[in-house]
Image (cartoon, rainbow, N blue to C red; front, side):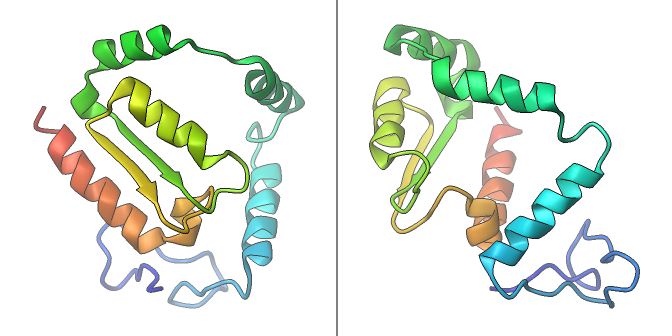
Amino acid sequence: EALPSPASTPRCGPPPDGAGAEYRLFDSNFQRFQAQELAKRRADGAFTLHGFLCQLVAAGWHCKSAAQLRDMADAVGRDRILVMHGTGDNMIAVENGEKLIEIIEPGVGLVVEGMGHAPIMERAVWFNELLEERLRVWSKL
């Protein structure tokens, strides 16, 4: 997959000092995960115990009814909502994404074959192109 190039990609800044002129791929997703974790832990305030505990509580006990989700979609406007889920997501079952699409009827509902939990990492070019396209549409609403 092609990486952004500071020489040709709009709004793409240079890699960190000492990394060379172009971005490079990690050798594995594990290396990518390690780098993200290190960067997160080095950034002041980005990884706090309080934030972690709040996310844990939200994941375990957060519950919205179908009616609450439909009300939210009505308030936001369905044309402004994109729901995407990958069939290869090992963290959240694809049935949950399909159910959310069915309940809120978003402007765009995608179930992507083989995609996992982190499309920005797994399919960066495709994901960024999708976001650019949707942002163009949403900016006209």
